[in-house]
Image (tube, rainbow over all chains, first blue to last red; front, side, top):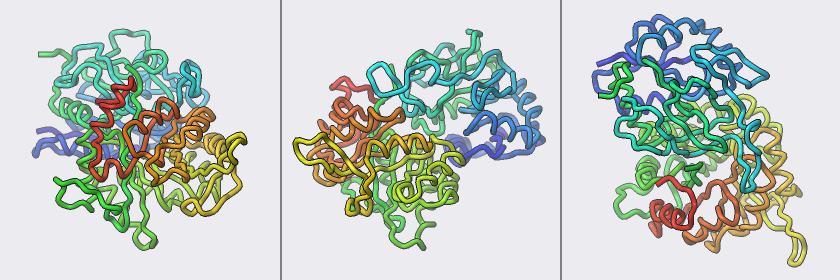
Length: 219
Length: 257
C-alpha cells in the first residue's frame, strides 16, 4: 500500500488524473489531492500534473510555496510529471517571453511554431499538437512494462522539452522534428502526454507508476 | 509514425439521457451516456463529443453529472458542447472531467467570449463550433456563411473569415458542420472542409453528412480534416469505430489502432 499525493496548485483539472489513478489503484492505496507541502513530504509517491501557461504555473507554485517540496520529492521518491509537470522541471521555458523554471534538468522548453511551418499543407503542421501520437521508447524502464513500442498516447501542447542530455530521454515523438516526449532519471519519470486520457496505454502506465519503487533498473 | 487522424462519435444528450436512439444489441440501457461512452472507448474511439440539447436551463446541472460519471470510467478526451455562454459554465465542465468545450451560438453573438474563455482556460480547451451553409449559386466561386438556430438563421458572416477570426480570438480547434449535409448521409461538404482546413493553422473536425466509411476517409484525404465526427453510422451499429479505423488505415491514413 502507498500514499500517493497528487499536487494541486490551482493549475487546472485534476478530476481526470485522480479518477484514472483511482481506477488502477489497489484498495489499500491512499490517494490525496493536496497543496500542502507536509502532505507531499510524507507521501510515498508524487504525481505532478499541470496545465496552462508556464508563467502561471511557476507563479502558482510560488504562491502555494511548493517549489521546495516538489524539488525535494523529485530528488527522493517515485515522481511522475505530466504535461506542464514535465516542462517546469527544466531550466527555462520560451513561453510568455521566457520563464525560469525549476531547473532540475538541463534543457529548455520550446515553441513548436518556431520549429515547423504552421498550416495545413503537406509539409506543415498545426499547433497545438493535439491528438494521439506514438511514443518511441528510448530507455528500458519499469514504467514501460506491458506497453508496446510506438504506443499511442494523447497529447495537447504547443511547447516541447528540448535537452542535450541524452541519458535523460526516455521517449520521443515525431511531430515535424522528433521531440523529447518523456524524460526519466533515477526516481523521476515525466511525460508531455496525458496518461489519464490515453485509454489502455495510459492506464497501464499509471498502474506501473503505482507499482514502481523508484529505481529505473528493469528486472 | 505521426499524429493520428481522430474518429469522434458524437452523442446528443437531453436531460442526462442519450437521445436519437443508440441501437447496440448488447447494450442494456441505450440511453445511458456512461454505457455508450464505454462501448465507444472499447471500440477505439479517439475522443467522445457530447452535445447537450437540453432545452431547459434548469437541467444544466444534469450535464455536469453526466460528464463526471463518464470521466470517472472512460479515460479518453471528452468534449462537451451546447448552450455554453459563460466562462463559469466552462470551468464547471472542465472541473467535472471534460477536456474541451464547444462554443457555438455564443461565439456568433459575442466573439469576445471566445477570447475571454481561451484567456482563462487556455486555447486547447476551446473548440469553436461553426455551422456553415453554402450561399453561392452554381457556377460562382463557392462561398459559405455561418448560420445559427439549426441552420435556419443566416448571420452574414463568411465561414472562412469567421474561422480565421475565431483562431485569432483563441480557438484551439474548429468543429465544422455543413448544414447542407447534416443528416443527409451523402458525405461531408469536402470543398467547405478543405477551404476551412487550409484557412486556419488549428485542427479542424469535419462534421455533417457521413453515411459510409469512404466518407470518413474522404474528409481526411480530400477535405484535409484532422478529425472526423459522426453520429448515426456508429449509433445504429452500421459500422463500428474499429471498422472505420481499419478502413482508414487501408487508405493509408494514420489512425490509432
